[in-house]
Image (cartoon, rainbow, N blue to C red; front, side):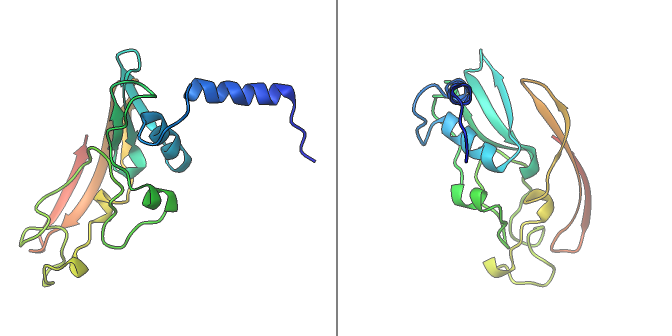
Length: 170
C-alpha cells in the first residue's frame, strides 16, 4: 500500500509551482521544456533575468529546439515533432524532429550532395541524411548560463566519392 504524507504532497506542489506557476498550456515555453525533459537531456541558456531562454539538445546535434522572450509562461517559438521525439525512434531517411536552428550541410541534392550515394538516382527513396548530422550527439566543450559550444568529428562522402574529414566546433 502506498502512503503519501502531507510533506510529500507539499514538496510535490512546491516543485510544480516553481517550474511553472500557472496552468501549463501547449504552445508555451514551459510546456515544451517539460515535454523535452521527459525525452532528452535539456540545456537551458538564459539571460535578461531568465525572460530570454532557449533550449539546446546536445544529443540532437546541439540544435536549438525552441526559445522564448517572456520566460516560462511565454510563447515557445520553435516547432517540434512531438510524436517522433516521444517515440525515441529514428526514421530511416531523415528525422524531422524540429527546432529553430541546427548544423546542416548543403546542397541536399545534386552531384556534390552528401545525402545520396554515388550512382543512385536523386529520389527520396535514395536520400539519406548522414547519421553524423541527423542522429549522433555533439559533444559539449564549454557551457555557461548564456552560451554553449560543441565539437563533432565527421567523415562524410559526397555523391562524387570525395571524402570530407570535418571537425565541427560550434
